[in-house]
Image (cartoon, helix red, strand yellow):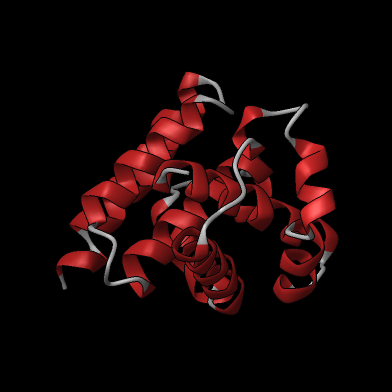
Length: 149
């Protein structure tokens, strides 16, 4: 499993956690129960391979950190999503933004440029070009603003 695949799974789990209100640990435990995970592979090749220990650690860290720092991350989104309220941003775009900003702010082993590039590329599979440009703009604004300070 590639880091990109692990990141996409983490984004989907972040989306699910925000939608259900389920704690990250409960969600992770249920989702990665081997029988449940295996049942997903016929529906989506994203789940063709169970994460190894390194990828599982990455997914767990990303989901847990995004949840733990959601208020701070959302504040950054508010600052750089000019004219947009967080509540009006699509849930998918919000999940992508939250994960990318989490990687930039709280995961020193992920290069900022990689977090942004991956977020934009993954968003292309879920959202319209205007939304992808919006995500790129928010992340670019953050990098020109807060990340430089």
